[in-house]
Amino acid sequence: MIDSGMFRISSRDANKTRGDLLAIRDFSVSFETEAGIARVLDRVNLLIGKGEIVGLVGESGSGKTTLARAILGVLAPNAHIDHGGLTFTGETNVTFVPQDPFSSLSPLFTVGDQIMELMRWRSPERRAGERFYSRSRRRADRERALAMLGAVQLPDPARLLTKYPHEVSGGQRQRIMIAMALLPKPALIVADEPTTALDVTIQAQILKLLRQLATEHNVSVLLTTHDLGTAWEICDRIMVMYAGQELETAPVASFFRAPMVPYTRRLLASLPTADAMPTAIQGEMPGLYQPPTGCRFHPRCQSAADICRDTRPPPSEPEPGHIIRCHHPRAYDA
Image 1 (tube, rainbow, N blue to C red):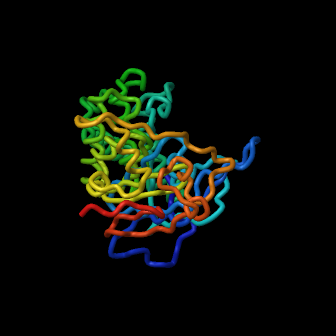
Image 2 (image 1 turned 90 degrees about the horizontal axis):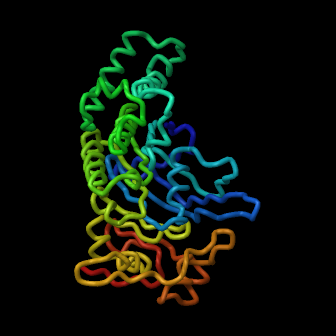
Image 3 (image 1 turned 30 degrees about the horizontal axis):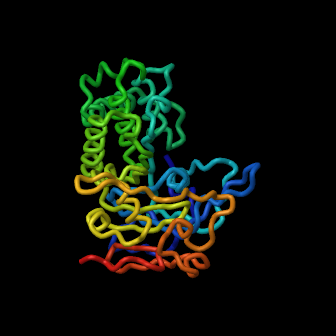
């Protein structure tokens, strides 16, 4: 959990009518390694509105996890912010739902101990500089925790508090993590592929629950995923990343109905459908130690021209809310 004071706060009123919660502008991150400098994010731009669920979609190595970690303020010590910044509107509480809840919960303590430690750490008493955690505050926090465990549809919350993480199922552990993410009353939840480790039937339940609770609590969500089906189920808007660059951002309906960037269209064509066999994207994701110049997708793009190799496309907005970075987009299908 982080507060906006950890980042450079802009004095500009960022799209007040839209109600932006977080603005990421021209954000570049590199990592210093023994093999050289890995340029992982290349001037990425993203806006997240209040109460909005945004899907960050991309293959492994696209930079989506690095962007999520930057928002959480937990970049590795060898990371360098080379350009741009993150701008939160007001004091913003950000929490996290991990990909693997089992590795995020300590096996040595009960679920209740770990939830109550979170509550103690976030209590008004501690934030006011007091060292004690009063009995009345602890009682009130326990009641809140029980209510939240019930809200995430976990049976017998009081008994669940006495269990250790290995004594509950994977789906229940993920529900516990969602409850713990909501308890501090965040403005933004970063969910890093939260259903990857779960069975397909449980995935659908978790996605529906996350969407429902985010709406009820007016919480924004940034969902990182490589699964377009997951993004379709839960997101209001989707941003596609490739090799550290954002290529296309659009509301979910127009994203699936009329993608405009060649990579996005190829990505959607790689999904199986009832009418056609999937087609693979030829080639491989480029290395980030010496990434391609211009648009980083150009070595795999059949529409690439000299300008694509030389110059990264500037952002354009051919339709309201549909933002692309491509020199040769397809005409919008109205």
